[in-house]
Amino acid sequence: MSNKEKEMSNKGTVILAAIIMISILLYGCSNHSMLSKKWGSSYELAKNGQIANPDASKNMEPVEGFDGKTAMKALDGYQQGCEKQKKETTYNLRLGNIDGIGKKKNK
Image (cartoon, rainbow, N blue to C red; front, side, top):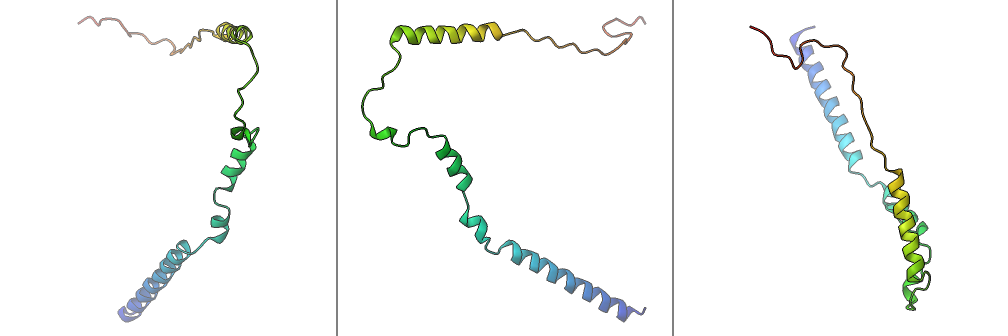
């Protein structure tokens, strides 16, 4: 190949690379309509699925349920149950037999 043919081949490669880069940039900046239509829908579905009573804020009556003694018994039972489950975790790391660790060397 002559120098002129190599230069033409290099120009063609540069032009092809430029076209590919421009097309990638244009595709990346294009409008993704499906994404914008569904943006945040999974968050809204999860949030609404966790609301037990959507009209609870409209009810201004006081909440009725446990009296004080029953609530304290439930709380004490919960706390005692948590204390029973606590265990001290011990981790053992075996390094094998390594001589000389922690010993002074005699000179």
